[in-house]
Image 1 (cartoon, rainbow, N blue to C red):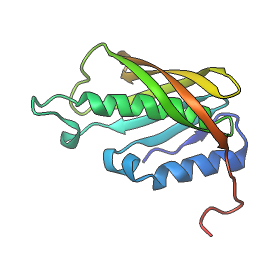
Image 2: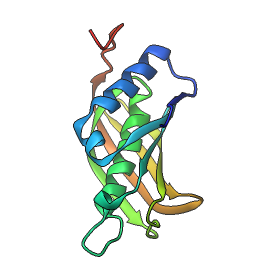
Image 3: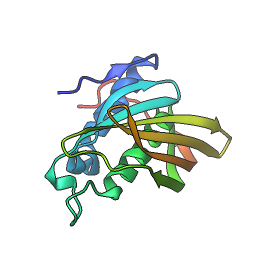
Amino acid sequence: MIEPKNMGIDELLFHHIVEANEQTPYYRLVGIKTRALAPGSAELVVEIDERHTNPLGRVHGGLIASLADAAMGNAIRSLGVRGVTIDCTISFLSAPPAGALLVGKGRVVKAGRNVIFAEASVYAGEDVVACAQGSFFRTGVAELQKNLSE
């Protein structure tokens, strides 16, 4: 079990993001979990298993791209901002080994009034398996509630 770490964002915002990620159907489907959130950065992880493989038995590139996009999106959310992906470019550098823990590290590069630029790297251990850049359209601010379970 991965216990998410708050690395300096508002406590209410931290719990809001963590709970929203835990309830996101796609994240649950592929196993994306929150590892850490800091102002303008995020770390998310996926434990690779057979459901993540392509017909060649390798980790599907779509999973790696999803993790990179999620890391960038959560880095933006750590600023209390909501946004949607406009574009995302990814370069695959190597194939992660079976059973590896994939770690997506995203950070905000520049937050403009309407467009936010971010980047992410995806790691398997010390090895970088992919690098990504994305542009996100700001759709508003986080709507925080005192108790999301209510």
